[in-house]
Length: 184
Image: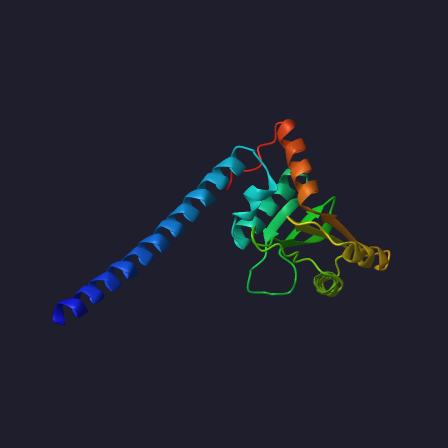
């Protein structure tokens, strides 16, 4: 009886060890994939799927670099603890601009930019005395969000850069010789 119990405990321990080893393998694989995708981004291969592997902070920093390369200056990534709906401040032609960056997880299939998010962002702009805003997302933007943005008062301008537009603009920059990602 003792040997049966000991055998059972040994088998159970081996199964636990296998489960732990699988989790470690999965984490290492994900780390390798993230590193590979970041290398691709550095070399200018921009596909929406590559951007999904960036963390939220890395995505914000990447968007800051993207904005610098597209002509914005004084680009600063905001403190993530502020929670005020604004992720980056920058300026173009002397006009201050607030930027909201959102990315969902690749497997989530959820669009994080909804009307409430835009309302909060617009409120942050008004409170900060800023009339120019940009929303950058990897995902697409729902029609109701676009309609809401169009309905904002005329002096409040929010430009939307969805995933497809983002990739297109990056490709255009890279074809013109701009290295976007050397700072990643």
